[in-house]
Amino acid sequence: MKLKMAIFELTGCGGCELTFIMLNEKLEDILELYDIAHFKMISSKEDLHKYDVAVVAGSVSTERDLKVLESARKKSRILLALGTCAVHGGPQSLILDEDLEGALAEIYGKKVPKEMKIFAGTPISEYVKVDVEIPGCPPESNDLFQALVDLAHGVVPYKWDYPVCLECKINETECVLVKRGIPCLGPITLGGCNAVCINLGIGCIGCRGPLPEDVNIPSEYEILKSLGISEKTIKRKLRMFSKRVSLNDHEKNLYK
Amino acid sequence: MHYKKLPKEFLEEFINRLRKWGEVHAPQKKGKNTYFFSRLDDPSKVQIDYTRTVIPPTKKYVLRPVEPLMLFHGDRAEEHTLRTTKLVLFGVHACDINALKILDRVYLSEPRDPYYEIRRKNIVIIGISCMPDDYCFCKSMGTDYAMSGFDLFLHELRDGYLIRVGSPMGHEITWNISDILEEVSEEDIEYLKKFEKQRLSSFKRHVDISAMPDILDLAYNSRVWERYSERCLGCGNCTLVCPTCRCFETYDVWLSVNTSMRVRRYDSCFMVSHGLVAGGHNFRPTRLDRFRHRYYCKSYFDPIHGINCVGCGRCDEFCPAGIKHIEVLNEVIGEIYGR
Image 1 (cartoon, each protein chain N blue to C red):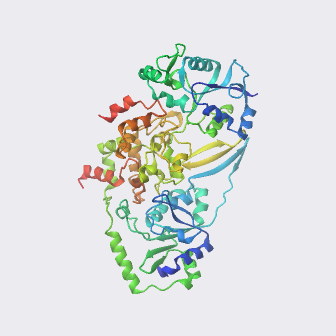
Image 2: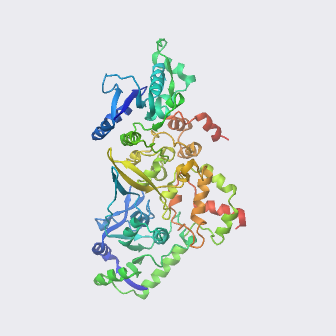
Image 3: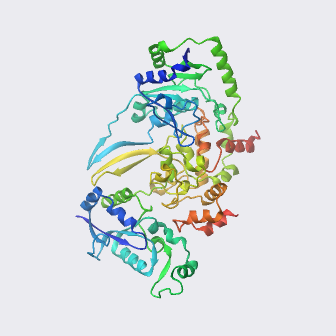
């Protein structure tokens, strides 16, 4: 019997959900294992009963997001966070709660619509229990494929913990940080992207979020500073994709 | 040992003749100053004065960075057919040749690794002399000269290369290409002596390893490890580029709904999961544990067989945090024995 899957979209650009569609020929494999009960991007059909797997993309940035997320959690056996917004908060989490009012005023002027109930972008794990996390902006469609097939076979998807540097070294790409002095977040960013940016001579911008367990932000900060980059730019760079890089904690370490 | 001379004008001819014994792989350049070993189609592309490659050639060709091991179709498992090409590695440095001996000891001892073994048997090694750069410390490790582990070893002369023949295969090659080789003259030997003298006096980094096992025994709780581990990013670059680091990770990937492939890939002891065992226990839970572990693995665990470091300098060249292996060791040594 096929499993029932639902894909929910919170605040994000829609790229993560597109990753599912971009499975292309592998989508046929997934459809052998799963029935898609709910996925607004491809069908207006709605099945709001129970799901085996709920895939959630996007961050919690509105009250509507939170309602959708809570209902997805209640109705599903396994909840999978797809993409950096869902896992780490994404670029919209750059704004902190205390700056939200100012940011809204900057965009909407004095007429902020009252019905807009907005809060700073937040990883979904701050509200509900998340079973599987697949970060990436956008996530690798193969990561999603591996996780979905694993789940259908009753296997717990493996949680990788290696940085971008690992694949970069395996590719024997010229290290942009060491050899060319280009800022690169590769050493502290979760790998799995095959170091695609560095292969193109661009420094890693950290779109897959920080390493899951041990991540040395202060040391990366010092390295970027030694390249002559301003403190403000470094902080924004480090926080670009992840609310989990807490600048407050990290500043404490920095200036001790 | 048997010696021959290759005149400089025959270098490209020499490389082309080597193709008889296998596909020639040699150091080539990418980007600003990054070197890597790859198939050499055009002999003029060879970077004979290269400093060091990212992945050591000796490790790269015997222990593939990523390689399939098995295929699973439903319940049926099938070993991946191992196909190997005969390879000639042209331009391997002495440190990497000495590192291969360490890998051999590990992978060719029982239980032998069949993937390693078949590749190892099909590799011809042509070494080449080099001048140390700012990172090299092979002299301190006693690995700056290869007395064995190669088929031919080329030493730079003013107008050619002095060839040392190191194996029956080496003899076969020199015998086959004798028409482009000459006998070594007294003048050549004088040049070689001068070159060696200059080489040995060019090292900028030194470490005294004579009491290393004792020192590391006593230094386990040294503050030096702690201080450096705060700077360490735990990225694992040093281990991935190390010619003697040989840990791999094994995992399965789905190819379709019912078929999967078992793969092995270079791993690093700097990954948190590296020390994770069944039951969820991690025997190297902190970065300090992992950082220190690397130094003990390189310099301590196997004192009978010598040190697991050949001083190639890769870990220093590729460390984003600029941590220098020798500097750390010298601080530890200084703390214990004031050496």
